[in-house]
Length: 337
Ligand code: NAD
Ligand code: TYD
Image 1: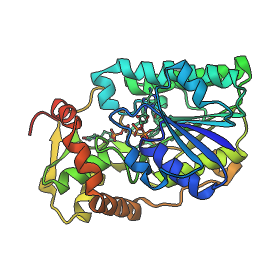
Image 2: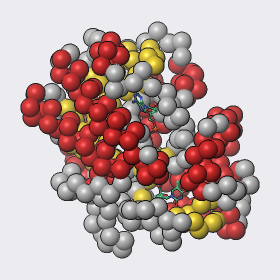
Image 3: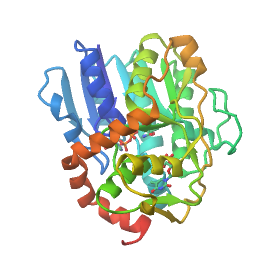
């Protein structure tokens, strides 16, 4: 089988490619990635020279590039996106361009090339926010109610993917998953930012009261879920994918990281809240469990500890990133420290 993975040099995309090469060694993978600030080929160093892997640098908004990359492809797994909420608040335009227009270009070419499956990787953030303290969870039937330019652009892409299935008969599947964590996550997101800041002797910025809740999913569990959806998922269906945490606040996550790193709570700094900040996310993943026998296998505490170890052992990976253009973004978001 030949797969086109978009955004394969990013956090989840690169973990997915490394997972796929190990679990499906006879498949051929084309990785189409623009290499924005978030893309990093170092993530894929171990498979660089493999005969069953090809990297193509290019933009999903460019039809000619996409046409070439999708040649002879059976399955598209679409990760490429602008993915950080805070950046979407600073500059929404890139989010609409890549997440909406880029997805539409991919869909057009996928119809033209008659791909056997177009799998769209989406987020639970399209469903908006749940109330703190409630036991409600997002399911596949939750209404769309995005609040940030990021989630609105992902919602737009989800709608387009379904519209292409209904209108042109494109065989699609969608996963809406919760917050991932694990190796190779760009240090602008909460967990890697917290770990690397403390390692640099800096504080962990906590937005608002810190009582915001995310549903944390270890990245390998996410990769396995996509694998199962490709193998056994029903065309046209959406699957919600979530982790094993039960309403753990950002403040608790920060405290756990500090404990693992042997530091005290003076490393926590409350900062200005994010505008439109979603209070709580939680995923009901019973559909994918019942239908495809998937469930998350990596518990939060042990795999957070392993993730911290990964960042400790791979300073070369994130130190370089933190010293580059990222610094400009950091100073704009958090003020110069
Ligand atoms: P990321 O920001 O780490 O990586 C995105 C990748 O896409 C980068 O390699 C970047 O270079 C590439 N890219 C961006 N614009 C492109 C373009 N126009 N053309 C080609 N490539 C482009 O993101 P991630 O965290 O790995 O997320 C991957 C996907 O999963 C996204 O679609 C995101 O919405 C979704 N998702 C992420 C999470 C999470 O917790 N990280 C949760 C739910 C869903
Ligand atoms: P983030 O990793 O940006 O993911 P998302 O916004 O897509 O859920 O943020 C996770 C949570 O952590 C979210 O509630 C915002 C919060 N947060 C902070 O409190 N401080 C920070 O510096 C960052 C980046 C996030």
